Structures are given as C-alpha cells and as structure tokens.
Image 1 (tube, rainbow, N blue to C red):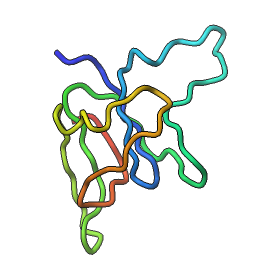
Image 2 (spheres, helix red, strand yellow):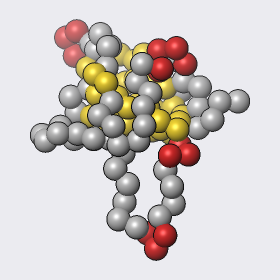
Image 3 (cartoon, helix red, strand yellow):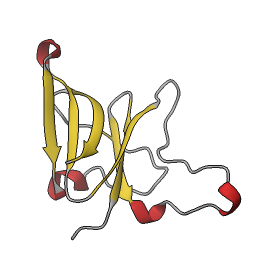
Length: 101
C-alpha cells in the first residue's frame, strides 16, 4: 500500500502534504519540528496522517457543509518537503479540517 503521509492545513487554506518519514524522532524530546512555513497571521488549523486519500471538510456556498476527497493525482499538487509553505487549496469551498479518508 501507499506509505503514510501527513497533511497540514492553514487558516488561509494552504495545504502541504509530505511523507510521514520526514518526521524524525528528536533525541531527548528536541525543540519540536516545523510542519509548515506560515507567515503571521496565518496559523495551522488541522493536521492529519493518511494513506491513499485525504478528506477535506468545510463549507461551500451559504455556509452549507461540504466535503471533498483528494486522491493521488490531486494530492500531487500539494506535495512538498516538510516546513515548506504549501499551496493554496484549489477547492470550491472553505476547508476547515483535513482527515484521512
């Protein structure tokens, strides 16, 4: 199967996907790892580990709840190295959460 991946979603709708293997265990706890490079006032709002598909949860027109699933081809656009800026989501909705599908 596909290797585990991590998705990071920012408040402004930037998404960064990278391999779980980029998260290294820090000796003695370390100082933490940067997951995504964001400029203030943008903040990290959701993070998920997933395999083949990533589910986007949020709202569409008129605040109606919507969800969308991104698979390999669609996810490729958001793939990068850990601690990069990610890419603005090309979704027809305001995404508020990511989760494994």
